[in-house]
Length: 205
Image (tube, rainbow, N blue to C red; front, side, top):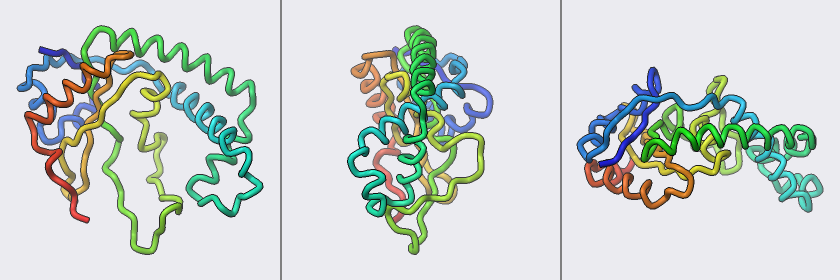
């Protein structure tokens, strides 16, 4: 038996697509409700750290070879070069505080369940090429709002298929585990996939 936490309200509806929670319950999970610690500040911290580290990693070639970078990644490096040392220090403070709160919550259960992304994946038109910036639907959150906080905290996470939209786009379920608890997280993912067949299906290309 393993215990899972699941985000509530509108996020519950997203995760429950194709009876994912029922499948987990049938596999032996005890489902309990919980709220993720406030993560808006954590997402902002993730961006400051990520962009600054990307700019540092590409310092030898950007902007001296700016023409070699596609429009999808170029803005990341530009923003990273403009991040100040004070902003990075503040971002590390936020990371420490958020990680402490998240790890405390995750220590009480075997896994936390939430969507992999907040919306269904989009498609590229034939005219678009690799490296072209993909238009994003206007929203106060990026599509990876559920992965950035986990990445920032260093907590292990696993994404498994959980169904398709009516348009045939694949949906993902994210399992987040306690710090250094990858073995248990993988066992939960295996139990879920043993109880479902979504990982055997593929979207039409």
